[in-house]
Length: 302
Image (cartoon, rainbow, N blue to C red; front, top):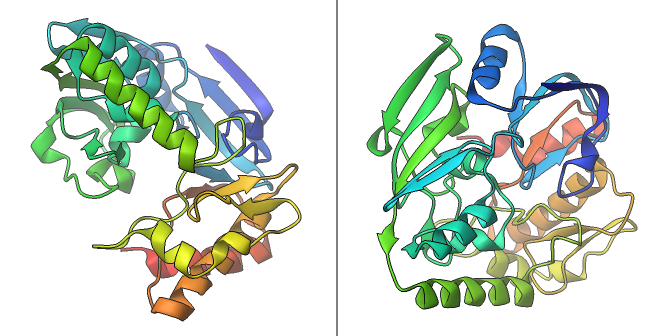
């Protein structure tokens, strides 16, 4: 197993932002993964780092990356995948087998562990739709448990895994048969939609910044509040979609948090709606970042 010390985490995040982490582990199988979860006293588990804002001050602690946990299997309509399998990869592989249900995952770079944790979704589909059961590590007992979909408390961008007690190890899905041409047509439409309104992965970003409030769209509210004009020296709101922030180059976590607060305040002042961040902030905070974080996150915790 690869272990790296004083590792520049920005090399792994889609924002290309983040300082040094004391120690980063890269387990390659379930045995190594569960052994780490049992033996390391304090840690953070990360997957593709696609919806993460990591502090430029770094993190004085341990990070376990699931990126090498790539095991998957397709048996009939059943799909079995480890936490580190990338969504776009699985979307392509299942499409080749004439299986429908993962088309939405083609458009963003999340891994199965993170996607299930936050119940990721797009285009009318979400990861929980076809989920059957999962195996998870219980951080309180140190044991592996099996849970059915009904036990995972799924809701919009949430599951019981979001609360930190459980770490996803492996998932089982049951997809539906469909003509391969129809599946690939839907995949292509999803890709074209992403290209038309979202920044490409070559432009450092972490996806949607804020969650949609009930019965409304965060992007619509932000657009109407005029945030597309918000342009700071190293970060800016994406000009094709008001709910994306892009790193123009050498941006820091403070830059992103500053722009997030500007966006948050614009919607709050115009509509008296307090948007909740979809991006997860991780790492050690500076004094200024603590102030910004309190505005965005602490008030919005539920």
